[in-house]
Structure formats: structure tokens, C-alpha cells
Length: 123
Image (spheres, rainbow, N blue to C red):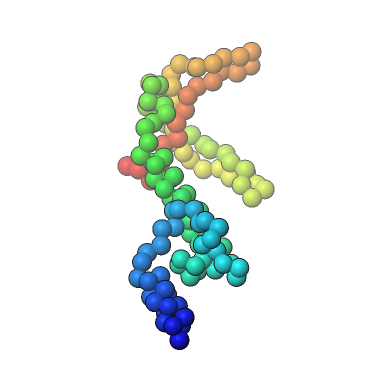
């Protein structure tokens, strides 16, 4: 009976505390049945949550990171046709970019300019 009460107490503590999905699971947190002892969820589901949270954190950090082209003087925004290869076919749409006025590299058959695609979600 004591073992049963101990198991019930452990389950109650696991329900009450919020697991930290951003920390890597140590080997002793996973039992033989591939269930996380700490949060009582399948290890694959826990790993998927951890990956999504890490991806969201990285996206948030990149969103508020400094602009890598801040040293470049970009011209006025202009609309261009953007062509992309998606699902085995070419897709065309209109994008708004800002391009530098001076090239940063030149070759025999090429001239390279800094360009930045402006987000369609920002105002």
C-alpha cells in the first residue's frame, strides 16, 4: 500500500508542476517504456514539443535581432516579380524589395547588389 500511495503522490506532484520542455531530458528521466517520468508524456511527443519551442524561440530572436544590412544604404522600395520553384512547378508572385544603389561585387558576366525583401506582414 505504501508503494501505491507514493506513486499517487508522485503523480500529483507531476500534474501540479509545469515541466521545463526547453531543458534536455537526461537519460534517467526516460523509463524503459519510453515515457517521461517527470511529465508522464510519451518521449516522442515531449521531444516534438521541445523542438517546436526551440524553433519559436529562435524565430523570436531573429525577429528582434539587429538588421544584417544596416551598414548598407538601401534605395526606395520597389515591386518586383518573384519566381520560386515550389512543388515541381514555378510560382510567380509580387514582392517588395529594397536594393542598394552600388554593387558590392562584380565579375565578367555579373554584378551583385545587396537586396532585402520587405515583409508583406509589416506596415
